[in-house]
Length: 92
Image 1 (cartoon, rainbow, N blue to C red):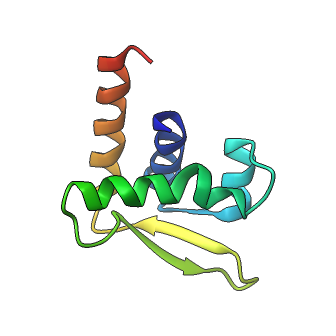
Image 2 (cartoon, rainbow, N blue to C red):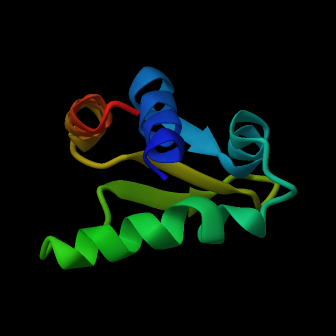
């Protein structure tokens, strides 16, 4: 899960946003319906566990009705670093 989260936040940090078709490709998922189970639902659970009121990303839709996630208040850089630090600590 940490690797997928790292890819997610790295893309948001680098480009300011990531769309569902991009995530499908980057994470080698079967389709958009795989994103919640493989990424956003586990991230949302961790967010709630740490007491945050909302996820550290903005979510909306593109003009062709695809989900788009974007940076919320510059948080993506900090999330990316925290994920990398955790992966290093776990030697992943």
